[in-house]
Image (cartoon, rainbow, N blue to C red; front, side, top):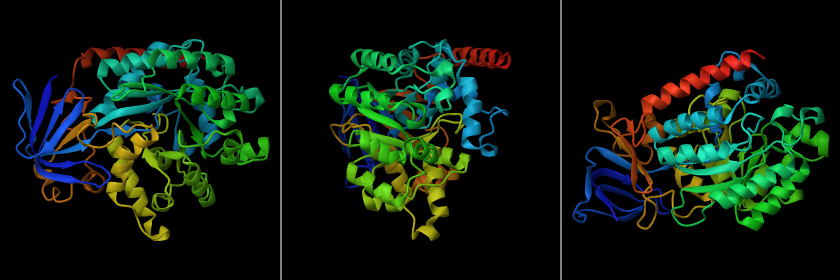
Length: 459
């Protein structure tokens, strides 16, 4: 198997359980996995050698919540999230999503994945809940196609919305499915794509979009299917829907999820800023995790999760970019930085702040744990060679190298990384994505985006 040797790295931040950092060290990759970390390592004949001088090696970032299809609705004046209520924003944005087709999903996914890779992300979870008469059931197939083209590891969440707007949801009729259609397609996707093995590049998650937008049977049946097929579960929770759920069911959302069994160590929720301390502690006992999306919360003006208390209570928190309608980029490095600054801003009222390194761990080891992966998330022999290199040799980075664990969050190293490797394959280096004609893809993506927006304005 092909070997790659990173020589003389200034530091290797492992994010392992002991939080090891190696200085002036080498890292040897063979095939998809890390073979050794140490000084003076030598590769076999034909080994590719990468000069790590002036570079810090980090584990590949793990994005635990996204909506890749939303990349085509970025930077629109008509959708100004900070100046709308959540329900006003949902009403506006779903009118756009209602017209997406599978080509738009494909190119929007390429766009977001490219952004993720260029900023050090090697594994992405996506909640794809946009199924329209134009897309049919093709979106996840197209996303798998995009992920394979760029070389990113994809956990695809098969979402759905089954409760129509006339029954009290925010979903237009064109985006609603039946529970039966959702289950049939979910089973097809599991049988087609789900690989539970070590170093798997693609997995399926069952992810009904949100309790307020689905019939209860959708969640109940999704739970049954996921448990029978051994896949994980995900949904939006604590995202401002509490009042609606109390009026509809007499229960807060977490209580409702616990009643139907949609909780456990194979379940993680997105956002959760609407939950209280008692609910967070209950989540810890139940084993549920959280995908924290700090940039989306800041843009929407929503409460910021108390990460220090969540850590003390034992809740596993990962990081997510969220979709481009509430975060106009797919830069998980930026989420580390913003996430840390938001925690620091609230630290006096909360009795202290987590370290910036805690946000890096959320974006690596914790994210892997939420996805049920023990083979990614840290740099250790036997784990997947998912990593990125950050160049700190420039003048602007003088004085930052003494603390590589906290560097990203505290210094704000959020630009394109120097190199990204996934499963032992270099997918991005020297400012270029490997194996694709980025210029041609960008031109076609822009044409499709313009055509989509023109079609929407006609309605």
